[in-house]
Amino acid sequence: MNKSASWLSLIVVATLTVFPSNSNVNAQNKQSDWQEDCLMDTEDYVEPNMLAMMAYRGAFEEEGIPGYVKFKTEFRSGDITGEQIVNAAIQNCMLSRRYTLERNSAYVEDVENQVQYFLGAQ
Image (cartoon, rainbow, N blue to C red; front, side, top):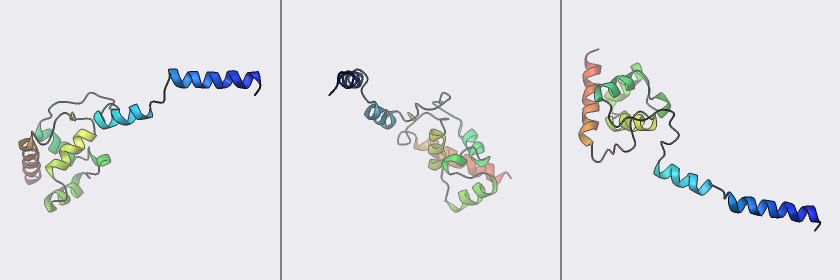
């Protein structure tokens, strides 16, 4: 091996030692804090009526919840639930992932009730 190839190998090894691949670190962070890529701060609490209105208006289409007439049809048929709306708000970076559904089942019910009220008023 020539002298320049030896130096290149040494530099590569030193770089990998000093700056290890962070793919494992990134994978762990995504599992433990998957909202770190949010561009805005998440809220610890969003009023259920606000989530209901946002869902109806199509704010969670990227998360798979359609808006307006299709939302109305799918909610009434049971294809969209309050839990899905809350999860969509978490995925959309509106509601903090720290807001666990297990501890806040009444919140999911409140969201569903608000959607029913909102749809009934139309």
